[in-house]
Image 1 (cartoon, rainbow, N blue to C red):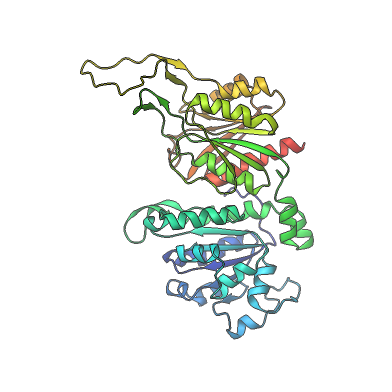
Image 2: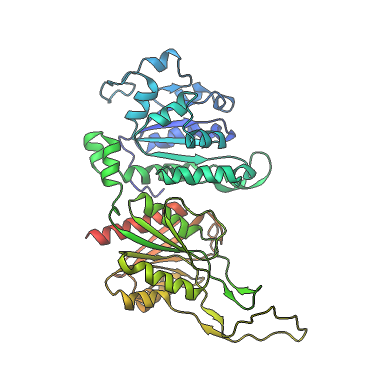
Length: 434
């Protein structure tokens, strides 16, 4: 498993809510422990329907608590043999403040809604409000619930507050349906924990002061302005028909959200998208390649970085009809012309700015991606192949290989797009600060 950072010595508070995926949590606790984490657990009363306290107590040296007023919850002690005594009494304060990370897995729609609106009616929801540490959510629910407007809005609100998410994934659900809503794999969750804790920097281990260290070192793009493009452009043939592509915008949106969380001011230039846009970023609509070229050039005037994740049409009709073209049984011939090369124009206009491009290739990916990087004068290119399993259009995952201008190649493997976005942006931050 490719771990973003060792979990050795990290204290993780695991919150378990009442989803059927809760039965997997003893294995999750065990996996976190194998990576060196010290895990304490809070279950909701509905979580006890799917996993027992005894099962969790058998795999962790930390406390396993349920009730806000149960005796164990009122006597905070040094549960870990190598942990210093606590000066914090109540469990919802002690556990929440002393954790380096609060992980909620599985997180039901109800739990996400309570955190969004600041409700605190049990030990877990109270602890979530009391923590000053990073929060990582692993949603799990029926596809209809995950796609509900209220849930999607709650997720975007939490993202805007800096809450991190891992998953959900697409697959067979407990009720026999198939779709988005399945809890991420244990491997993906452990890796996401490493990524979040890694943002806290080395001061976390030295001082134990997790929240301040996270605030200082977890935003390496603070003070920077980043322009991100997302979605697919639409080139009009007539008032009702367009030439477009199958881009959902998810990759660009993930980059915009991660850039925001890493401290950057974000300008998001979007074409056609099918996914909800991240909260807390400036959004500029640019439906065509020409409009996107103008918007990006304008947005880059005082920006430091461009991440070009949009799928821009290579060609547009040479002539656009002002009225609907009538059907003709003999067919229709369209003359196409090339669209503006946005990255090349940005490089020519702003020769010293940091440019990141994407190269969608279905064969010889690294070779072709490297050629594109040199041709357009990029600092970094992210190469992906939509034909690889799990990396199809609209997926929440991507299998990306990064190639930089010095020829270094890093294969990220299949992982959630949020993690791909963070890997790209941390490379950008390193280059900007070197």
